[in-house]
Length: 265
Image 1 (cartoon, rainbow, N blue to C red):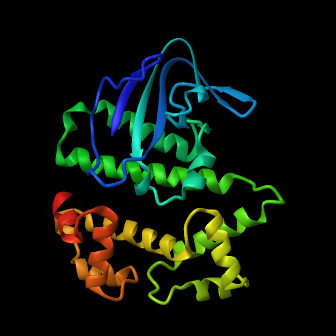
Image 2: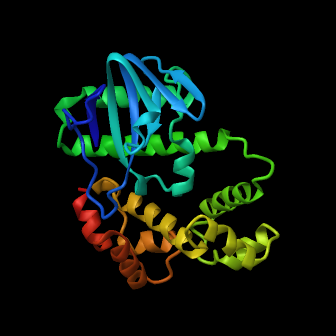
């Protein structure tokens, strides 16, 4: 969803696009600076935004953003579950200012600016598809920001978890992906692997399942002329049984895979 807000005014004044409803109502807020004076405070550092710059912020932490006089932000509310990133990783990008004139930041900034301006797409099928593309771009930006961070030398656990999560992402389609194979590939014990994910507030199995489900959900959302069967999607992403996939999908999203597929037409 895209909302346009002004300084000292937290109520949305414009709603343009909405992604399909899910059971996850937690959003990541991404502000696009349009005009005026806005700064972002992260720790002891204060950085002023230029028009076109982006900033990730938590609505519960409004002290991240500071306004000096009239200004305008376009705020994009992105369902966190669509990004495939752990809560701890999302926390790491909160308060980050992203330059809108270079690299992936420029690509995202330009796309979102154009998307917010196209009010004729409101509520249309084209609008929904563009919104999903916007989410994919934001996901790429988040992953790039996380990759740029240099972890503290003492934070070996966090670095290891990030490396393991990247490994899992590369092997999601492997039906034999398991805690044992992951631990073996990283030269650690299965017990230590479980301990690492426990510190992240999840389990290895839950992480793999959620990433596979997110991949399946995206693929099932394809346009009608490229839409695969539910069974084919389940098999491609490592689910050995279509019935098990359907039950797991419903438990996660409150609807069957076929119902989700129909809702995104």
